[in-house]
Every structure is written in C-alpha cells, then in structure tokens.
Image (tube, rainbow, N blue to C red):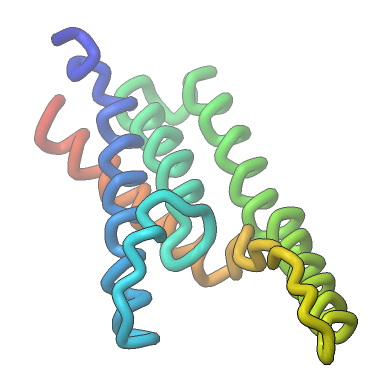
Length: 147
C-alpha cells in the first residue's frame, strides 16, 4: 500500500500511537486505576501532539535534509503545536479548573449539579518535552530501518 511508503507519515503515526497508548499505564502508576478513556483524550504524559509533530519534523529532516523547505515547514508547525500545547491549551485547562471550583461553590447545599469542564486540556512543559523526545526517537528509528 502506498500509504505505508510515506515514511514521514509512518514516523508521525507511530510516535502519536505510542504516546497515546503509554498514557494509560503511566496514569495507572500514579492513581492505581485503569483509565482507558485516556487513549482518546488530549492531555497527559507524554504529549501525543508533541510526539506527532516532532516525529514528522525530524523525519522530514532525515529523509529530505535539514536544509530543505520540507523540514522548515515541519519545524515551524512543530513549534506552533508545542507552544500551543504548553501555553494556550494549558491556560484553558486552568480556566476550566477555576470555573469548576466556582460551580462547586455555587452548587454546595443545592441538589443542582452542573456538568464539569475538562481540566486537562494542555500539557506541562515536561509532558511536551517527553513528547518531543519520543517523536525524535521514533523518527530516527523509522529513518534507520526504512530508508
């Protein structure tokens, strides 16, 4: 299948899949509960967004050259996504946390219970860094074995 001949895409999908999958056992080690919903959610350790875009950018550099326009586009996209994951989406999560606390304060003593907002939307710098490292490693392995 031609799709699997696109080694850059293969590197990105593998990095994203691994990052998304390892969130479940990492969360289990923290909480001693299996949370399979993490397979389909944003946030958590490591950042699958960071792993995906970093693997794509690094693979572009490996396969097309680090002086190519391909790599320049990939790196620029990766920088935006990692910044967004650690900055804007992280702040949105903090806002959700504050709003949920306000709802809890207003609802205390009343049977009214509002739906809680998701608080884990973004990533800590460590989570994003772990995703970046994972992306680089996976792209390097794909380049090593598939070139």
